[in-house]
Length: 120
Image (tube, rainbow, N blue to C red; front, side, top):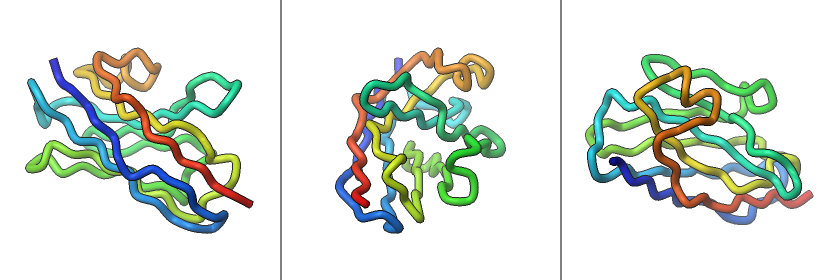
């Protein structure tokens, strides 16, 4: 089983940037597919980005967010630029062996989440 811990959230003004990190421990493997999801107040959790051999992004963040991973550090990152108030949410890191399972939000492992708040 893999454990995930997110960090890097905070309060930022619109147009600003943040970088989230997700450190994996336990039965870590570079073969894990990694992803970021987010959940805004009163809304369902939604897909943000996923990385395996390549990256895929939600349309709402494409061109502004970049997902990357450093397998030597068992860490995945989410670089967020040009942040908007609608990006305000709790951001969750997730991992699974299956790309299809993970992109559907049915991850084998989830982090505890980190709050991102974007002020207008």
